[in-house]
Every structure is written in structure tokens, then in C-alpha cells.
Length: 330
Length: 284
Image (tube, rainbow over the protein chains, first blue to last red):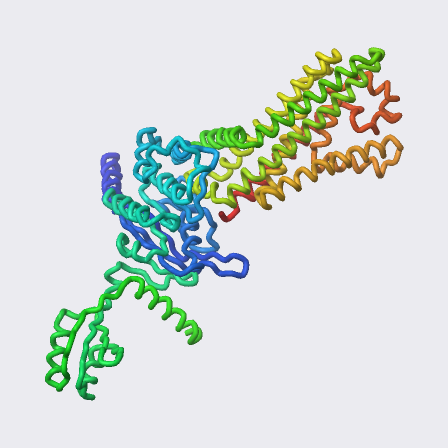
């Protein structure tokens, strides 16, 4: 091959690589962690795309924080692989553009807020100027408190400082582990705005929160962990895709009851029936049902769509998991 | 971030922590009390009508005694600073956000260690120097090798804090301080017991001191420092190295050998490497 050809080949390869989509913000597969006899995490695989907000949900002890720490290279997985922004997370350099607010947050009480931020800016290696650091403090509502010692801060103010620390190194991926645990409703709204602002700037966020409403408002995708395993994952539309309709019916003949059951699972409560609709319904199922019920002699008093909240869906997933465990290993 | 920059940043942070926490004030207060008491003691001594030989002997012994006080203060200070600053930060979560930065844990540990070394040895050198000047002013005694003596005192502090750093990577903050200071005192007692054994010609008891000095080099370095602080004639006045001077806890019969100094350096390197291995493998 001539030099010109090989040069063109290298260029073509470079173009090909440049054209590839960037590596996900975070990716892991088959993560496993055992603490003595307790299996904390087993076979967890998940991905956070660039600019995507992913919620991590699950009951206490589900292994959420352990998964986060394995992703960040703070805990060594017994098995599996984790990557941050395209680099192996065991390599410290992978964390160069990663911000992290730990669940158990505490900052040097003998430093001032501005000094804590300057320390983290320096450790991140991002070369963030002092003015940008001050903007960061202002963003989390701590402007004017930069010269105060952290030791005198309330828990909520320390959590705000933690948020500023997570944001100060110009991150491309931010991990927030219970970011609102110590905040009042106003603080929670601030965090929500910050997360949405991060998304608008193309920064990916992994959000672990007990406040399901918070997750539902901001997350593109949700991963549900239960007992160290992924119990469900998908976009909110996928997870909440199952719709229901509630009907107030009287004079319900056996034939009409059969017609109801033909549509999907039916829950009866007095004169009210709740029917699950299939996900691929094109909008004709409910009018057809009402027409058929009327022709079968039923009196239709009310028809109400039912919206399933993420909370109900989460409880359903966790209860299904508990029930299948109770039924024995399949 | 380059490893050297990380190490320096963390070392500077550790020094800043020491200066802003109460430990510095506590150390300063203890030092002032020790300096005051010793200058009073030495001035009383100067008022006694002693021969120049007697005066040098007494000054040597007293200087070693007071310096032992400083090394104990430095040992307590660094042991109880090293424990909380390492395992305390790991337990409370302060280390979590720092170690989630693009830095190596070994660089973090080296920075902490360097900061503590600067703090601990800075303290003993400054306090020791002040003490030597007090002795010079009160009884006009100047030790034969003050620089070596102060350097060995600093080395003793470094050995103890390296041990505390290792302990702090595996056990709780308070326990690591208590165990380190306990081992320091045990080695000192073992050294005295060994010296008595040697003076009595009992090899088995004599070996207690030698073995403990190899296991933890604090006592060996301390004996080297004493030898550099004391007047060479003191040993002769006490009956000579073979007659009983060796059994006296605040006199040292022989200077430090280079081999022993080499062992102390190797010991620090090995214990630090163990601490780094333990810290790097630790789940946070």
C-alpha cells in the first residue's frame, strides 16, 4: 500500500470514529457485590446516555448506593464492568468530568464554602476560575455565604454546598444520591430546576431519590432496583404505558360481564369496575366497550380514565417481585 | 490532575486542617507549659553550686528528659491527628466526595502523610530548638550535635505517624491513635528493660530491647537523639557504658548506626506501602 493510500485509510478511519456517537455517560454490565454473607448487588446492568436523566428507584437496601459507588469506582465490584464517559471507571481519569453528591455528604467543617469549592475545582483539574466558582455557589442558593465556615452550616445548606461541589468541575455526567434528603420544599424545587437546566445543557444525570414525584417530573428513564437486581427499567411512557378505565355500571348481565372481561383484567368494587387496557389500544376499545355494554342491557353512569402514577407502578413492581419470591424460585 | 499536584494539594489541606483545628492550640499550650517549667527548673539548677562536670551531666539528663516530654507530646498530637484525618474522613463521608475526583487514592494518602510529616516534624524541631536555646541561656549547655538530634526526633515522629496511618486504614480513628501511642510507650519501656538487662549481663532480657527496636524503630531513633543531645562525658561520669549508664533511661550509650537508620527508612517505606495497599483496596 502506498503512503498516500495509507494516509487516506487513516483519515477514513478517523472520520468513521469521529462519526460514531459518543460513549454513554455511564454504562455497566453484570455488576455484582457481596458484603460478607449479604449479596448487595447482583447482575445489574444499566446505561445513562449523554444528556439523559435517569432515575434510580427502589426500596431501602435495594443496592442503589452500592451500584452508584461501583459506577464511580469507589467500591470494587466482585464481577462485572463499569465505564464512565467511555473510560473504565477503575481508572481515576474516568472521573475527570463527573460530579458526585454522595448520600452521606459532609465537607471539611474547618474550611469556608468557597474554600471547599476551590479545593474540588482544583482536584477536578478543570481549571475553573474563581468567578465561575462563585456562580456555582449562587446557583445553589449560597451566594453571600462563601466566606462562612462549613462547620456552621445547617444540614440543608451543606447539601446545597454538596450540589455546588458536584457541579463545579464542569461535569458531563452528574450523580446525585438522594440530593434532596435534607432540603425543604423550596430547596427540592431548586434541585429540580437545576437538574432540568443540566439536561438543557446536555449534561447526563443519574438521580437516586426516594421522592418518586421528583423522579417522575424530571427523569427520561427509570431503573427500578429491588434486592440488588434490576426489577424493571424503561422510559416513563413504557413503565406507565398500561392504562386503565373506570366504569360505573348497573344492571350488569352475565353477558355484559363477559364482554368486560374480554377486554382485560377487571377489578370490581360495588358498582364500579376498573378494566386494564392493553398497551396497543388505538383509542377504539373504550367507545366499543360502552356501545356493546349498552346493547347488552347495562346502564352506563360514568366512564373515567385512570392514570397510573409512577408510585403505584413502582409498588406494583415491588409487590410482584415479593409475590414471585414467595411462590418459590421459578 | 497530575499526581504531584494532587499530593501537594492534599498535603496543604492537611496542614491547613491542623492549623485550624484545636490540636495546634493544644500543642502550642503544652509546649509553652513545658518550656516555662523547664526554664524555671534549669535556672534553679544554675543557682546550685555544681562543678562544671556535674552541671553538664545534670543538664544532659534533664535535657533528654524534657525532650522525651516533647516527643511524647508530638506522638500524641500526630497520632490523634492522623487517625481522625484519615479514617475519620472516610467514615464521615468527607473523603468520599474527594476520592470521587480524578485522583489516585495512593496520591491522596501520600498527600495526607506528607502534610502530617511536615506538621509533626515541624513541631518537634521548633519546640526542640526552643528548648535547646532555653538550656543555653539558663545553664550555658550546648548539645554536641543538635541538628542530628532534632532530625532524629523528627524521624521518630515520622515512624509513629506512619504506623498510625496504617492503623487508620484498617481500624477506627480513636482506636488507631490509642494503639499507636500504646505501642510507642511499650517500645520505650521495652528499651529501658532491655538496657537494664544488658547492664546486668542478662542476654535474654537485653534482647527484649533490641527486638522491640527492630519491630518499631521509635525507641532506637529516640536513643540516637538522646546520644546527640547529651554531653559525651556524662556516660563516663555515670560509670561508663558497661557499668550502668546504659541502664539509666535518659542516657544513651551509643550513637545511631547507619544500618539502623537504613532500617528505619525501610521500615517507614514498608509500612507506608502496606497502608497504601490497604487504602487502595478499601470499599468506601
